Amino acid sequence: MTEFHDVIQRGPKAVSEDVRERAILVGVDRPGLKWPVESSLAELERLADTAGADTVAITTQKLSSPNPRTFVGSGKAEEIAQLARSCSADLVIFDDELSPSQQANLEKVVDKDVKVIDRTALILDIFALHATSKEGRLQVRLAQNQYLYPRLRGMWAHLASNRLGGGVGSRFGEGESQLEVDRRMVRKRITSIKRELEHLGSVRSVQRESRLTSGMFKVALAGYTNAGKSSLLNHLTKADVLSYDKLFATLDSTTRRYKLPEGREITLTDTVGFIQKLPTTLVEAFKSTLDEITGADLILHVIDSSSPEYDAQILAVEEVLDQIKAHEIPCIRVFNKIDLLDGDNRAGLAARHPHDVLVSSLTGEGIDTLVKRIELAASSADAAMEVLIPYSKGKLVSIAHERCRIISEEHREKGTYLSMMVPQAYRDMFEPYRNSEPTS
Image (cartoon, rainbow, N blue to C red; front, top):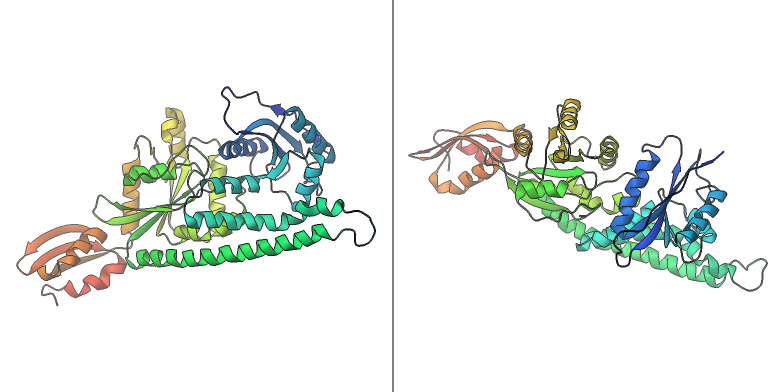
């Protein structure tokens, strides 16, 4: 039993934009959804806008389960085709991932010049637009080819069906031959990209290993896309990382050094944003980037406090953190964009999340509190040491100021006396100087 919802049609844009496609969004409301279908489609509309398409209509259908042939019911598929004609749409975007056969069947229903894509294809398109580094572009290409491979048959079905004659064997020939050629080509492409990514990954691993062996405390910023991770990194480190009010504005991880007020240096790494229904192929393709999270000592889970869906966004992020086995790393929840909340909403948020930090990367409110929480986390495993470092070992004093928390410092006859909290990675380095008569 199905129930058809009213179609929502959009009016024309006030200002025309160059090369903007016209899109119809399609959602299926079924039992057990984590997100209300209206909220999910609102996010899909933002994704479409980011990709360069204007939404001209939104249509939904209630179903107990997706139709195996066309995802929506056959009557709804015809209705979508009619809607595409009446709205002069260029593409139809489904809010869920379509199987290759579902996509092929839907393409037979709508007009030939109307593209049918799903949420995964849309996200891949956005990633292709925004990837800037060589590794980022390769990761996107890998995910695109992995997505394309099972859909090749549908792309060549028209060649097989247009063959003259019939009977046994008529379903093969030119279309099947071209299909096999393309499959081999895509397989080779996937293998080649994986090889390149492995090489780049080994370079990244060396860089990451050098940070690990440096003993420097590592903080990774994770969160839903557009939660303000890049803006927060910019505010803390005075960096100039790209920061736009767009979904997936940045894809490549960025690491910056930051000196805590106590004097210790740490690293802060901005990572790719998460999203609900994040395609598995993307999680796998971006594994080397997500390793920046799994290799961190502390995760700052940045949350858009102004979003009405922030509870669901938190769950979506935590699911991915669990998927990449980062859920055991210490984590501080950071509710960003509190400048967008009025007094009552801000007070309510603070009451509901008393152990989390509320900040505004725009105004700087709450940043001092966040920095203190980071300092506490960075020093949680430190050990108290008193050392006397000879003046001939001045490099050690510099390391102490960069990597440790100095409590007191005196210049004595035989060297520099330091009382300090020392991270575990540096204890052996300073151990020979714990005696009042240091060994050289």
